[in-house]
Length: 340
Ligand code: 2P0
Image (cartoon, rainbow, N blue to C red; front, side, top):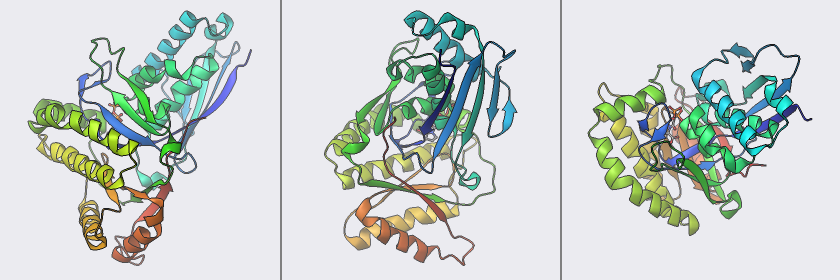
């Protein structure tokens, strides 16, 4: 009986953003989203889970600090995984009866301020599934119950989270639309923009947008379905300029909705806006679209670009944000990755 596993799960950065739920407790989104799962070297969560008859209680340690296992989202993932393992008869009953200990850490630089819930919950659920011998195909919807974007980190490469139509959310899960090997030349540079301001968390921000934004309805009905279709085609064709334009437009629209939220959710700062202008200027001067930006619920820029332009774009970034300047930015580099 194997009673300890260690797993690694990478982050994903959406190019068509998830923003808004139709069901808060089941974490069902109002629109499909699409992301790229990124290399594990610099950006990932690592989780060790063990089960033992001697354990008296369930325990979870996150980044060295003990957290409450009774947290609603953690408990729900744990119960669902055990239930599925029972049904699948994939694991000995003695193991399912044991309490578990979880030790999880993220290796992102703390300054990066990057969302860790996607890789964190993906790692937790993937680890539990490994412990109880469940297959990967059976757990994307469970990861979704931990944190919406986590369902996309269960798969590598290019991943679509299909919102589904069922009331119980059984069809709301992620699917891989292309493996990492399909477009390995696509690189990501995450520009870490220092920011001291406290932001509204994604969960409460998107709930506020659903209730107060008028633009969000337009986005969900008129924009996202067509964008998902077009960007999937752009990925299949490895058509970078098309992929880039859709990515930038969707990031801009997502932040427009954040500003249309009342009170507004302001995630980008002056440096973020400067990056947007510089990237458009760069592409214009080059005569073609060589790099795309996208921003999540924070000021950091994620730049997607073909490998051959990385050096050129980095030297441009270093030129516009010189090291001796207070506005200098650090960066993390990644490429699409497949899960083991
Ligand atoms: C995304 N974000 O598609 C979007 C873009 C942030 C901006 O998914 O409430 O932390 O746990 O489902 O997954 C962040 O949302 O929120 C997010 P919950 P989550 O990546």
